Each structure stands twice: as structure tokens, then as C-alpha cells.
Image (tube, rainbow, N blue to C red; front, side):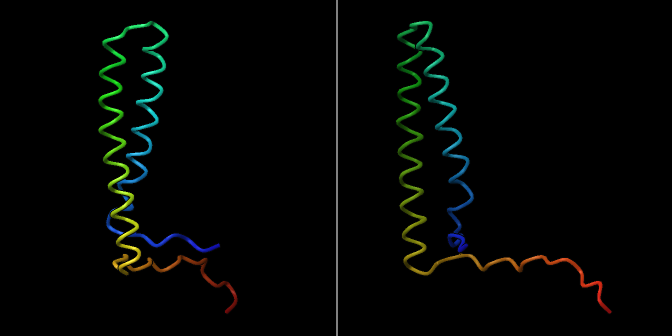
Amino acid sequence: MQNEPQTRHSRILPELRFSLNLLYVGRLLVGMKSAEEGQELFDERIETVTDDLVSTELLHEAAVLAGDVLPEAPSVSAPDDTE
């Protein structure tokens, strides 16, 4: 299995995706109580986080295409007991 190359933008992507998911859950919960002003605040924040996520994903893809990737960390293997 080949891993996707890591760029300097890779680290923030999971955080942004998680934040967006939490905002959707929060909006759903506020919507259950039918608080219109709460939904509008969530919608604005969802839009902002979505824009950040899309731009970061584009920067990541551009970095991969340009070859601006981080060096791979050496794999850690178990010590060899056969001596």
C-alpha cells in the first residue's frame, strides 16, 4: 500500500476535517431546538472552515505536483534477534 506524500500542509488537513464534522454535528443539534440565530452562526463558521479546508487541500495537491514533499521518516523495524 502506497501512502500519500506528506507536505507541510498535510498536518492541518485532519484538524480541518474534524472541525468541519463537529460544526455539522453542532448545527444538527441546534437545528433540533429550532434556534434560527444559532443555525446562522454555524452556517457562517461552516462556510469559513470549508473554505479553509478546500484551500489547504489545493495547496497540498499543488505541493505534491510541484514535488515539494517532506522527506519520508525511516520505518521503524523490530530488532533482529537472530545473532
